[in-house]
Amino acid sequence: MSDLAARPVSVGDEAPDFTLEGTGGRSYHLAGQRGGPVVLVFYPADKSPVCTQQLRSYSEDMSAFGRLGATVWCLSPQDVASHEEFAATEGLVLPLLADTDKAVGADYHILGPLGFYRRSVFVVDSDGLIRFARRSLTSMTYLPARRLLDAVAASTTA
Image 1 (cartoon, rainbow, N blue to C red):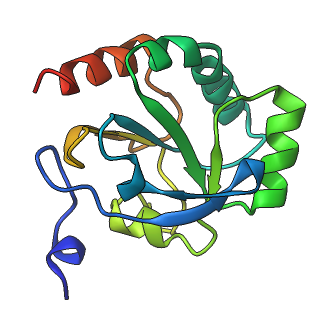
Image 2 (image 1 turned 90 degrees about the vertical axis):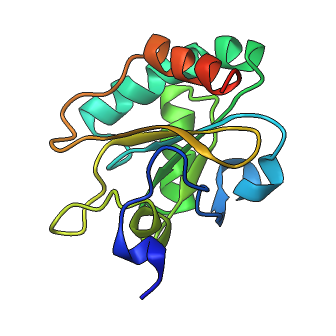
């Protein structure tokens, strides 16, 4: 059993690397983002009410994330086709990544007891270290964009 499997990743740890397919016909590789902060948003499901509200909110603030040099990626277990439809319907401008086997969710320890994604957010700094981590127990609420922007700003001064 690896150290990653033994304990949840937390602030100060190296972010588990991954490559996933996502919207826009692209592959997204976390290690390829070194040099700038990355916000990883784990959300339970496309088209659910809270997820829709959350991703709309973050999408509306993409220019603010951009001013901080931050990339925002949203991950859930649905496939790319579902993500493409969801993004088009809701006008989302952030990438939606497909973790269909939930391997990335397992690496970040965001899977609930029944294997469902818990709403969670991680800020990874330019060196690939986790600088902010929040795992929701109920997935009923999400962090407002302002709070994530503050976490990103703090990660650039850490």
